[in-house]
Length: 265
Image (tube, one colour):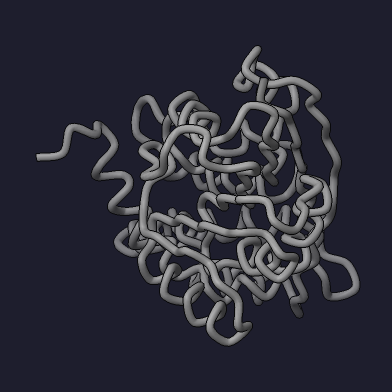
């Protein structure tokens, strides 16, 4: 029996995030922006946490970094390996958990995460692990969803209908610079922030909603859980469509994100 109090949640995440692969079409460009924000250079040892299908990892490898990449979902790791083979770059992909990284202390010059580590249930454990494997003077860099913008609001809406287990921190808290400063604490210095907008093409709020119901783990899970409660499901969809319209313009949903960079002491 697992000693991890969130083993059941992580099993559900492993299954749900396996659907994510089609969304790499819109996360590829922000991956390059994150690496620029991190100042990644050729020859550096880089770990990408919550790597998904490998968009950050492959971009770093093509820039000459020595890349390791880890994700909870084996289906996404398999996608990443296929991408690396096609791009003819070397990336060490592994299945694993950010709360228990399978790497030595101070093994990497850079640790990154694009919309990945923020879904770990215990932020303090994820931070400790990411900093543990980072060399002193190394760079920690990640992209997250601010709570005040579309994706953060969407996850808050999901939590309204299916509250997270007790003790699980809401993922959009990772998009608040003040909370980030608190979580990183005195272990880092020179914290820098930047912001970007990811564009998701779609024909209507309903088209976008259908897409994320099929590809975005937490939303797909919610829809599955509400199949026996059609009124509640209809209410969720109506609320989502309602505020989606505020971010849809010229057939694009604008998804604002925050980038953070810090140096380990």
